[in-house]
Amino acid sequence: MGTTTIRVDSETHTRLVQLSREAGWSLVDTVREATEALRRQRFAQQVRVELGRLAADEQSWAAYLAEGDSTSVSDGLG
Image (cartoon, rainbow, N blue to C red):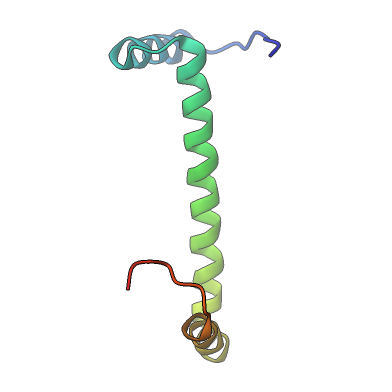
């Protein structure tokens, strides 16, 4: 895998180094993990927004819930 250089302010660099040391990771692994965490956080926020829009429409929300109840795929939680 290739590498590149990114510029961050000194405070951010210090935090990244601290996080790396605490976890016993390389700086690259810490940045990779932070990037993935941010990607997941943004995805979850988008899901919350879209579910909020869906829930605001009673008919659409009822249809969504009915579809979930009728699925044959078990989530393993019930």
